[in-house]
Length: 246
Image 1 (tube, rainbow, N blue to C red):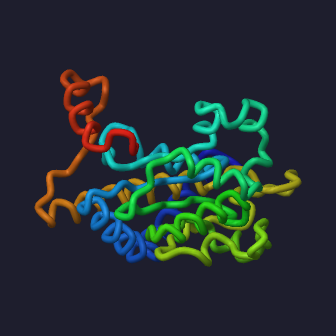
Image 2: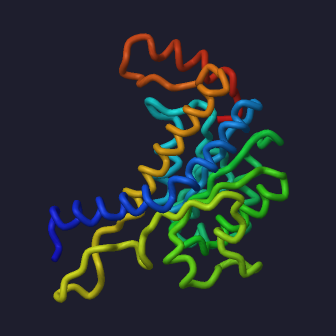
Image 3: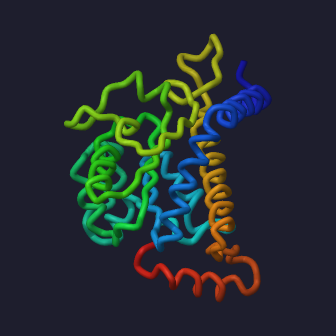
């Protein structure tokens, strides 16, 4: 049955599955990310399509950690590498060459780390980005749907899917095709789940990284909402530690 109540109930089940099956993976990934941040590193986060929401959830937001850098196809437009038609073409995420163009825009350092997010884990740009980052020695966290990605082929010349390149793998728990509600009158399922589980995974990572940094005795670099008095001064000061990197 399709209804708001049924979606809420199903979403709770998927979130409980995440808690029961992925918390150890989340904690291991967060420990690695905290170590890199303690070393002065930045965490580069990349997802295409709706997986972009994951990078937005972890970077440049109130209550978030400062050394989180969202990589985006839009940056190619801002730097004049691509035009708007290129950026808005959904095929862009299938092109491995785009990863090279995108990575050339950023200051990537040896003490950095990366999180790559893709529900299907099959598209060329994400897989090429993973390969390029691993060539540079960056530890890689991958968030994907294992049910989906293991049932599709790769769209990359290597034949690899994203999960096969991960140092730390987190399963968002979603099904093949992402949608979870069905009805006999529908031609396919409706209402996706990966954005919901993804947002919770992102915030769980933020919480665990913060816990690790506190245990290490580090001053945790947290952004204050821009709509709180005094936030602009605080945020500008703490962002200055990562100028040109986030």
